[in-house]
Length: 366
Ligand code: NAD
Ligand code: GLY
Image (tube, rainbow, N blue to C red):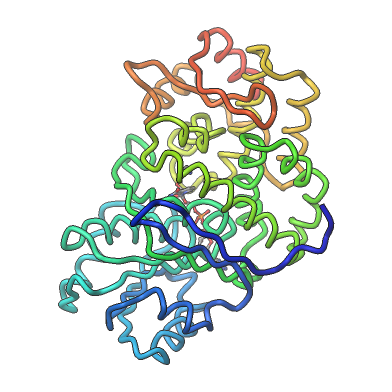
C-alpha cells in the first residue's frame, strides 16, 4: 500500500436500527453540519476533562452554538484512576442540576476514559439519552469510541461495571492528535497493531513497514491506520455486538494487559502500554502452544517495541498474575480464556495448560 491514502473517510457501523456513522478527518471539530446533524435536541452536555478542555472545549462549544445548540460543559479530573463511580456521579450531578431531560445529548470529548464514562452516563441517565463520541486520542479514534462498550473500573477489576450502549455518531478529528503526548500516541498504536494481529496479516505487514511514519504522525499514515482499524472493529461489532463469542478477539493482549493495569494500580501503565506488552505475552504463549513460530513472535515483539511500547512486564508473583486474570470477563468457572494467534492474522480463543502460562509470565517479566 502506498503513502497516498486519503486523509478523510466515512464509514458505517451496521447494527440495524442502532447503526451509526464514523467520520474521520481533519478539523471536524469545526464542522457544524456534521455535529449538529447528529444531534436532534437543542441541549448538549459536553463531557471532557481538565487536559482536553483548554485545548478543544471552546472550539467545539462554538461549533455547536453556531448550529443553535445550548451547551452545558462538564469538566472532570483527568486520568484512568478517575474512571470510577465518583466521576459518573459528577456527570449526573450537573445533568440534574441543569434539569437536563431525555432530549439532552451527551458528547464525549476526549480519550477512552471520557468516552467510556460518558457512554455509561448516557446509558443510565433517565434510562438512556443520546450520545456522540468525539474521540481525541489515537486509542479512542482507532478503538474505544466504536462499538458501544461503556463503563467504569472497580478496584477489583478493570471495566467491570458498564453497559453496551452505542453512540449516534463517532466524529474523529485527526488534527487533535497533534497535541497528544508521544507516550499516548504509542498507546493508541497498540490497538492498531492488535487489529492487524487478529484479523489481517496484510494489515500487520503494512504496520510493520509504516510504524516509523505512524510514530512521526504522518497524516496520511495515521488516517489509513485509523480508517482500517475502524473498519476492522466495525465488522467484528456488526457480527457480535454483545460479545457472545467473536468480539472477544478484540481482547487480544488484554488478559495480560488488564492484569498489569490492575496489579500495578490504574494509571501506572497506560492501557495501551499494558496491551502492547500483553500482546507480546500472548504471542509468547501462542508460540509455546505451537500455534506460531519463533520468528512470528519476534515480529510482533519488534513492531510493539518500534511503536514505543514496553515489551517486558513489571515482575509480579505468578499467583498474583493468575488471580488477576481470573477476574477477566472472559473467564468462566475460574478458567482463564486467552486470545491467541493461530497463525498471525487469525485469532483463537482457548484455555492453556498452567505450566505454559507460568512459563510465559516468567519469560516476559523482569
Ligand atoms: P485517556 O482517555 O486517559 O487519554 C489519555 C491522555 O491524553 C489523558 O491525559 C487525556 O486527558 C489526554 N488527551 C486526550 N486527548 C488529548 C489531545 N488531543 N491532546 C492532548 N492530550 C489529550 O486514555 P485513552 O488511551 O484514550 O483511553 C484508555 C481508556 O479507554 C481505558 O480506560 C480503556 O479501558 C478504554 N478502552 C475502551 C474501549 C472500548 O471499547 N470502550 C476500548 C479500548 C480502551
Ligand atoms: N476493546 C474491546 C472491544 O471493544 O470489544
